[in-house]
Image (cartoon, rainbow, N blue to C red; front, side, top):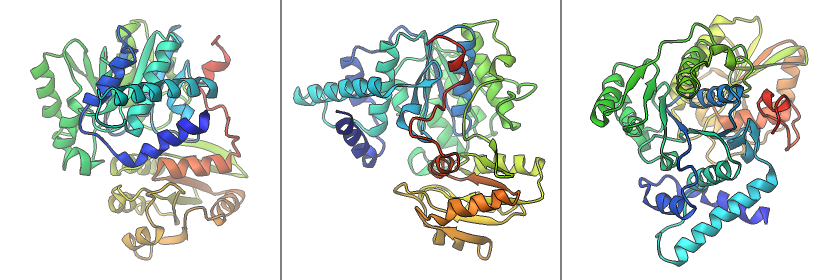
Length: 415
């Protein structure tokens, strides 16, 4: 049955985002409100959500908790989005879970209790919630996909709300400017769930404070951690670590920053020695994310560096490219195979004379060129799109589809 539910799921990619939770609420209730009564950590923001979620889940596991972690997008396999105790859910369990969610949708449509089919992300969110319930997790960590007010992850009542750094992204949906975007994300703040936020842009601070005051929610601005986790480099991870620690300490007061040191979260300033050189995978895909990456690259100068960039058509390519061109390194532009990837010729027009090489979707010359550069001792930084990073990471590391990208604690604790 696997192909049937996968086809049904991926057919929903074109449905976009629904600015209403009514249909999702009906489906969640029909499934028995799977996470009812369970501690839930809900994370919204623009950048750092995934890293924060991974650290929070890892820290809770360090304390002996059985943890469900829902994140997006995935790098290589859909299963990565739904993890139990750090390990992507097994194929057979994913089959069972999605079949039940789609069955529930069918039952509701047939009974005229909902007026539309569920979107791609709504189906994923329901599957995660149901899987966590059936796996008897002690706590669920949910990363919002986009925005907050109408994000599917809001269907579960959170116990703790975390707000990572808010920047410009998805303006065509969330509204123009930081204040509008912050308003959509701060809408998840609710009474009874303490809210923690990293330091924010001056345009964002009053929006978050107003939402907390209106709902009578305790709001805490966390101070940057004294250091980043050993396995997650970058100054920005000090903010994410502080946020994750605040959440974990609400459930386990003895939690300590050291609990995050061996967390594994691929594609986030991930450095891999290869062929005499180094490849850096980073899923930075908006202006703030690229600015953070550029800052890191400046702090870690190397003699020979090549930048490989590609993004989706709906992303702010011009400011991202402007940031990257501040680095004195050859720029290669590449397109992923994912529908909606930006045309490399159009990207090149945004930085006249700057792009050294162009690679279209599926161009077999790209991995060959990267390997040649690595053999020559270069550092190759791949960024701009989660899809591009995922494709090239899989090719360069020669990952089998069932590659274990789980948390290192998987190999040390019973499942």
